[in-house]
Image (cartoon, rainbow, N blue to C red; front, side, top):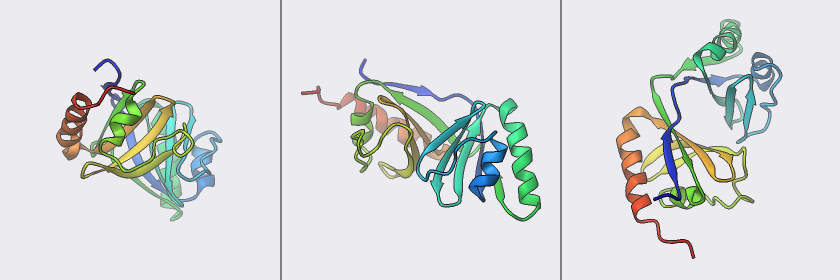
Length: 168
């Protein structure tokens, strides 16, 4: 309480892109999307590289329309796959000096900045739910999960927050 703020990340258009980094970079105005398990931002669009050829791409609907159009053209050429998951996921931000401690209560990752630095993203679990985590800042994370897991994930965060021991 007071050491962590959990907030709705707001509405966003989201899609999973599977293809080449060069095609995605061109659609995102030259953003460096080449680093695996890292986030890239350009023109208010974020791309989280979750695997060798997989990105979770999200942003405001107005900004995403041009990028999506370019990627759908690549899909039509047979060089990419673009799947809209805007209604599938929910997203929250978790921020504050104890944000990493709160996430560690339900996630097996090491949140030390040397192991999970700002800009890193990954697919993992929180409790029993598959989630995507992105470290947006030293004390700020974005968590995405399937919408059907929202009550479970937010409930587990609430219980964990109430049980968070004082920092030594």
